[in-house]
Image (tube, rainbow, N blue to C red):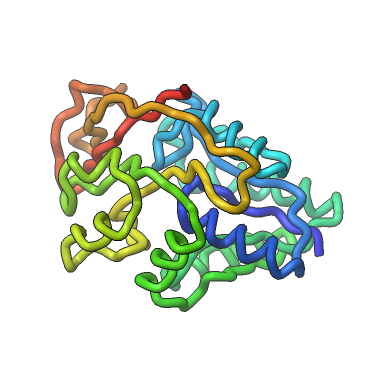
Length: 241
């Protein structure tokens, strides 16, 4: 069955793709990723487009990049995604695959939007215990670095760290081991689905704030952003090596 895989560049996407490729039920035509139109970085993860492209090249699956305008509304996002999936449907795609684990509202949203273009949403990791998933990811030999954390829950020292057993042990009790509630985001740079590892260097750590208290013209790496720990994220920039 022809499918589009929604690729974030992080651990859940990598583990999900690993399982899908192993099972062989779905033929992945494209990796689909949304990026900031202004900054050419993966939305929410802040990872540079260059590194995303290296991931796709190493995996060996074509990459489709959807660029989101700065401050785009949910309606604009839905319209952009609907147009992309409508195009894929005309080319025979019947399924869209996601690495979501247990956020019911998000699943229902995805299913509802895809029904509009007659594409079925698939969730291979759905309902599995997150502590087991993150340890499976590590045990399979995948390597990832933490690129963003919720500033209300984790301090900046958690960014730039390897996603390993020690990282999991260091997480506060109120943080999901997979970051399923948006507590942290990762960039996967090596593992079984990659032909070769992605080379990078750690850059600076910066705070990005969202919402009314953020600077109107700020970006993912604006050092002048005003702290608002209810809506702030610490990012660690990754530089292509």
